[in-house]
Image (cartoon, rainbow over all chains, first blue to last red; front, side, top):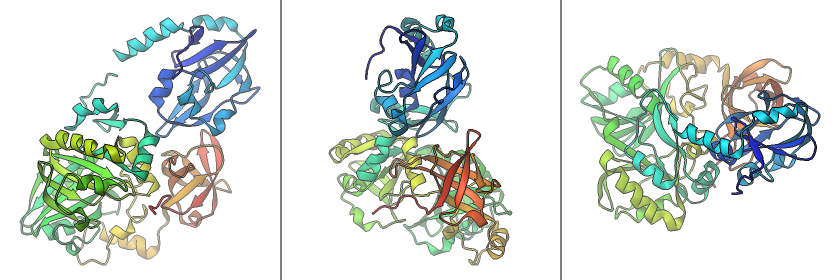
Length: 131
Length: 370
């Protein structure tokens, strides 16, 4: 499994956010999240040009066993969707930080990034949950 | 994860972690949903073999001179037709034909039967049986003394055979042998039954012996690809084989006829069993709805409780179980729908997250072993 890179930000809903050029970010789910979900067999992403809002529903991910809702960690407009996941949703299990990314969003409120967790804070948040 | 209620554990709980189990709350039981992964475990059972801890299942012994006629008055199948060392799948119904539970009846002796019931229904079943007891019968709930391990898959027999001199080929489908010695684990009831659509055995033994047997089986089965399997794979396997799950295909609102287990309903048997007249009525008037297979051809996976609509947009039923089928790689569901839409190839819609997605009625079982 690929290790998380240090420049990622995280939400408490277990999504990661990677800042690309300008106000563009890439979003995926964390290694912890894919591990918890188990074999992922279906992804319903928002579509290109859809608006997403921080902490609101943007899609869903289904494992063999259950449906999990996806909450957007940021607000903005979807500019790209990982179409590969339509035929190969298992990429999220295999490479959650690489080929298993979900969408790219042009931020409408870049300041929202400040409320996300750093890698260190996210790891601490996970530890808390275990106790 | 912290939970308020204390979860029940099987005698095998302690060994789960040695095999990488992910444990969940399953109806008040702390059980493994998976070990290596649901799809991998599913494939193991279809191709080779898998080992399941199903010790949460309930066991009720009914004994006495009138045991046979008493059981026959409670269940839909004809228990008088089975011999000693034979078992039978059956349902137990309310007077209105709704289902209390579905289970196996083992004939241990002329006046002694073992009922193997669903974990979530143990108390409900026991109370129902006790309330209706008649004649010379005694009841005993031995659920916590008995462990159950299931070994399932095309290689199940050859793996299990390594542990015993008893010739397993002599145990036919829905037959069993008692007091089998499995490499020093004595007194095992070995039954050629299962819940996966594959050949295999269900093994009943003293709770204290469960760990030893589990470890022995995984040891001798390793070279044949035997894998520990969780409830996740058990569910996808039974689903593909269209084996009913109580709480989904069968409920107090769904009769065994509607759920497609009419083969276990003998309305022509002599006993005036509970629910007989309602079930007879359903047969004579014709069912209004029945269980069908549904394939979602649009994008989406059908899930328990999703609504089903006709092409014209009329609500016609609901999904009882659904998943992405690991063997068929299709998004499939079982659904109870009105009779007029139940023919294979009828186009339908399934409501998935407020959208109506294209689907079609397909034949079941989805999977049949070759």
